[in-house]
Image (cartoon, rainbow over all chains, first blue to last red; front, side, top):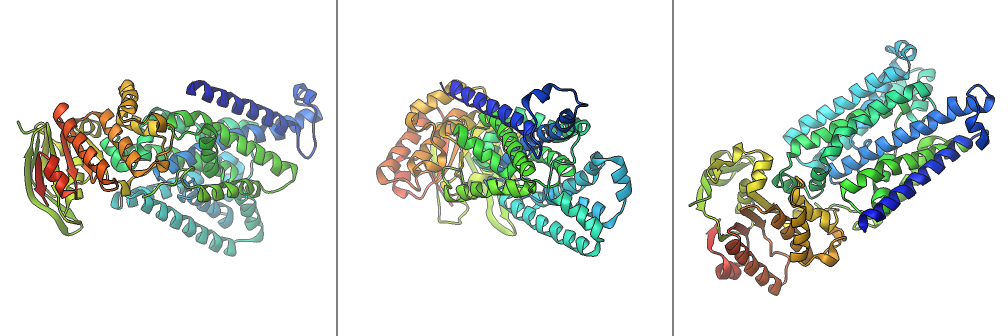
Length: 332
Length: 204
């Protein structure tokens, strides 16, 4: 009975995503008709569709689902419903590395010539640096909540250095960095999408085999460990996949806030379950749906993407804070 | 035969010695109650038995095997653990929380059985955060019942229960230990219940 219920919900969500995606392809600053979906890529409508809208929509699906999985894993592993990639300082680390590239002009020309994918290198280095530091600190103080505080401090620290770099950099460089920092899918092209997919979604594949063990994590590390879960190994397997994925997304699109935090909650409320083995089908779909919608609104009204995700995400945070039991606030 | 042997163990928390040179030997089919004031090291001892903290000296042997050399999964086939409520509460629905006792996915029927046995039918879709203390305790017991280890550790299982439930809990624990040949170890402040039900009492 329950299985069929969730299967129906899964297909409802899938149909909704398809409908929203078609709407996102047709709507924009210049609306195109349904028929032009089948026109050649050389016609004016075809060019808008294939060069501009298709990368946006497909990119939003990949990025949204990846961010949602990152947020979900972090919320379970840190047992904190307000965790997300940006909270642990991983986005901050990636962002700082990008700030060095954009604001000091070191290697800037090389990176611009090599294309957006090359920005993955500093973003990944920055994200993994923060992750490694967290790993060292975690060995000294093994409490999840401590790690969360340290992650927050990293975010503030990288933000502080970025502001110093901004103060010292030229106006043009600052401008580029600020635009990147707004987070957007504008820079994506169709040829980049496979790389984006490989870097942001594929790292999660191995984690899908360990969802039963992830459920044990939700009961706390003591119970997980005494239930037969190698907590240290599992925690790092999940966090490294989060690190690689977040770095890729940040390199291609800049920091995108709230999707990772919000999507897991929406999915949990939608299927009324916290069982990772069920949630795993819904969380990526919800993440994709939220980002496709946010991106559509952002393009339609020419507003920054992060302003839209925040407008949707902040009420979600309020819901979590005011309904702690229903949204699963962990007492510890 | 002694299945659980604690040999001269010492535990340090920071620089403070919490347990020093402690030994104990226990067999299955019994209920052991650990008594002691707050901060006397009861919970630390339980953590050590669960393999959650490292010993500064000594070793714990389960069926002759040194605990420190066992993998997480081997350890989990010998020892299960219910921490005190104040350290654990989680956003999982009851069924999924009970299934944590079956982390390798090999005892699906036992999860169903546990829901019936512990009378959790009507609560199975509720979140743990929505349960009363007594209901939460039942879920935890169901979880370790699914895990089905010869040694079960319980940290103050009666702390948040009313008088009748406490007595029932202790009676059930003793029955479980004797019927299923388990070694059940509880930290407990309920001195009269310890006296009434425990096979053995140790002071910390």
